[in-house]
Image 1: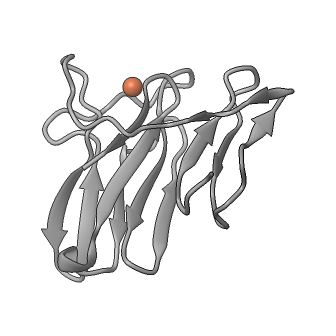
Image 2: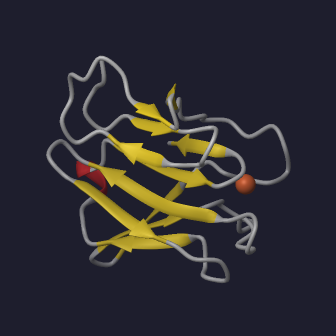
Length: 126
Ligand SMILES: [Fe+2]
């Protein structure tokens, strides 16, 4: 059964969907079941994906990654950054050449989870 806020991926066409209403037995795309993405939390490589949260005046700045910015190339980039609170989902959509970061006007203590999706390396959270 799908759960609220889960993210699913189609290996055939690259479709990515987020569940807004839970309870479906399965999600199917291109005639095959979609893969539920499990967010990774640790980078083994030098390229950093785990979102890093900085408290700023009036909100939080989420960076991918902390010291070295993740590439934002045409074929490899961070597609979105999301911040989850108890009742809201904030999402910044990104394009190649933009900085892999996003500012959200909310308090750090309200943040339950921060996640991002890299078009090559999948879903990551902190
Ligand atoms: Fe990546």
